[in-house]
Picture (spheres, rainbow, N blue to C red):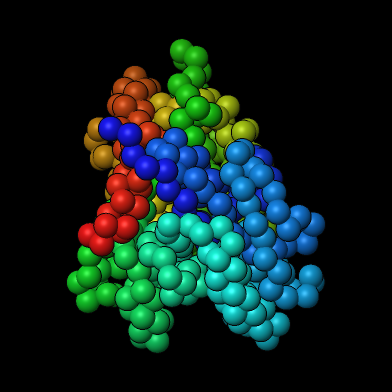
Length: 388
């Protein structure tokens, strides 16, 4: 059955600044996925130094709105909004200006482009901008915004924003449950973001090196690399670790590796573009995600698509990504001894690890492929427009 085309305005503070940029890459992937379902997408996102006011990235039109003096427009794209806002008066003023001018920008885009629907990514800040413009709005929460809603004042604000929406979604079952609790039982459905199945593909036979492990993530406390360093020191096997990522704890973690005597087994790769990750997944025996309260853990999906099994803490949305004893291993959160034991097991039983990796790819394709996710969100748009 042929469905009528829809125009949907994406409102987000995280979106790739150019092709290949990792910032908000999953939002771009969703835009392309729903485009194949007959949805025309335009993206509204904040300005930042060096970025044009308008652009087209991988076939998706992007409009960027100014919200402050150029030197202040640093809240978006880098994952440091919370630190900037909590750490300075300038950050707080910049956020207030973003909310005010962002709301005006949404109103102008609705009047000029006449979308059928607004899709806000993160209820804060985008959901605060996207409602009340005469068209339905749905909201997808990605993690940080739901954690924010734990505070009493933020929860009240979340409830107010949710009342303006025609549909509430979260990228993992864990986030959906947390959102329902904050909203007093209102329906919040699970709808993940799509993974880049064309980029993350199975490796050549025997590409995985049985004693080489991988960590991909921001170098901060929540991502748990400190626990992984302790696990390396406690392990029976002298496996090596590639670390991809940057963050505020980078130097402290390097010093910690030195003090634990494992520094010579670690390669610090810093930030890498997404295009360089498939080769790392392909040569790794396992991806290790010792994160707590991860919104989803999309890197785990990317690894699965490369037939690389995942060892993760049984926390947050990672329980949606990893099926313990079938596609990987879920470890009690904070149990460093169990983490070391699981990684040693990958080294000692590579055939089992490869079998888990193959099963992980099958499951990831069924749940996180652009086709599956695009169909899911097209149905969400239709439901919102029909008042369901």
